[in-house]
Image (cartoon, rainbow over all chains, first blue to last red; front, top):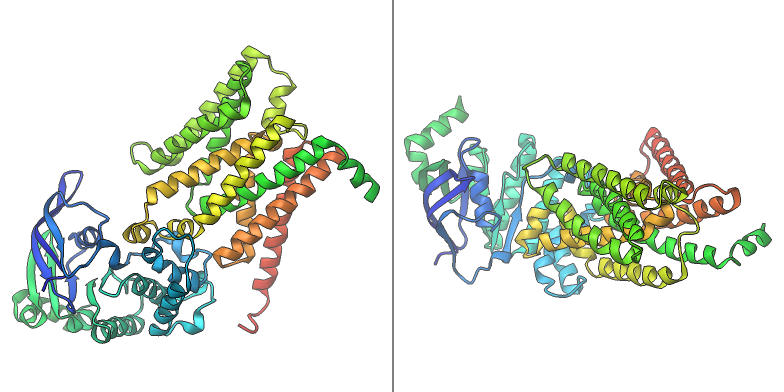
Length: 235
Length: 278
């Protein structure tokens, strides 16, 4: 019962490894939170998981019939996207691309899928609003809805709450958790937010160029690393 | 007034110019929205200069201008895309270099072959008389192909314009569609170049898109508005060129600028009003 597994994974840019010797696996229904300092290779790892980066050594294996195009990816937003002229619906619908096959246009099945994702994330009221006029939190919810359109198995989220204020982040994390719990969608997420994100995750992967910890959240909070993290928040 | 318009349309060359020009204006405006949003606007400009050199070369060797320029420009379009994505030389500087290099080459070829005559002026700034009978069929066919391809791949073009990384994860061949975009742009640029002029054709790509983005905020609305603005500007510009004997390209660009300023003004007024009913 493994959805996605990495074995002895090394990821490098121009032969400079950013992560080396990484082994971990995620089971269906898990909620894995990837933590670590800036430049610790978290984003690179996530890119490798969704197939945007080829491992220089080791392998990523998918089980449970998961195909690479069935992953719902939420990348970090670029500056161009923030003011992009597109309606919320156009963006969410584009998440159904993998179901399009050779057809040129979306059909009623894809439109229904997009509507469901919009409802799921309380975005129905914003359906026809321009994406560029939404708040940061709303924009992230739109991108999450798009990712939900793309998958019914695995969400891979690259710092979904980056740049959001604490209350909005908390809201977003709550939604991610409920998608994970209610729809049994596996979540792999990068986050700095120990109090909200880490506490809700079932598993933790702590990276700093090499894996420092991989295991359940309870076990993590018992380690010195986890304690440091916790105290850092308490202080 | 009606009589004058009827007279204008009684000239076959004017009818040809209106038909081909409107089709090219339509193609350019659609492609332009993606080019502007993807920060590829400089590629369009570079391609027009490459097209100019290819055209000069074809004329000097007495070859068919369109049939030589299109393959050459499409090839360079793929090259420019590569350069833009590689980090070896900064993309925009490399594109600028190829752009001025082609312009220089084109001018040299013309001055050696036919000499610096009015031909040069026509190439650079366009002429209303550009469309010969034999070009018309090919131009119409090619622009219809561009339109059909754009229509078929509309959803994919939207996604690669908005988010290449996400597009890749859904299994879309992003590089292929980027090449398609560049190739179609190259064809459009060459088709429109002799009428609008090598120096001005890139405005066909950029200005209608920018104008539409002043007021519209959904991708489809921007596309439709850019198309309308582009065609109306072309018809207005070409008519102006006919009645006032002004250069075709400059007249069309002036009409586009008029729309851009008008749309910007409306946007300013809207923003100044307190937000109501939203």
